[in-house]
Image 1: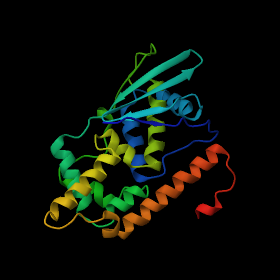
Image 2: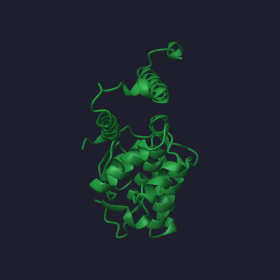
Image 3: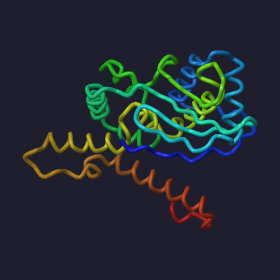
Length: 231
């Protein structure tokens, strides 16, 4: 698996809560995992402080550095990855209904996808007991406030891109798309491989939107002037 390094979040003055149903479900799991409400409050403050570094996400876990007045600490987290049969079932679930891939690429996680995955034996969203963390600080509670701060920021990542959740569960974006493409090719072995974008216009539109959004972010980060030509 290939790890993905997500940019650090700037400091935020107001409370930044998850806005999507899957982001809120992640936050509920974080709240279940917390030992005390005081730790949760401290974790939320850290998540908004701008003192959490880039978050590296990989299959089954994540790593981030967190700074506070006592020093810089390393948080390592674990989320149980799906087994091979569960990944196969999830790929089949995504492929079973038109528009699901396009929805994921557009930053949406359809309720029906999660429900049908659960019916197939695949739990996409973890519960509190599945969120394991360690930290180099000397706090005795697990998760500590540093880990809770990182977990809250992961909810923001999930809000923006549900593929982050799939990556944590062991099925990153590139692998899912490759499996879907391979599955399509396997269904038509006697014929030349079809262009997946031509076969699914919704997918082509979603990919175009994702690419335009990526270019806008790049231009803004480079202070390269207006990005009106991308619309």
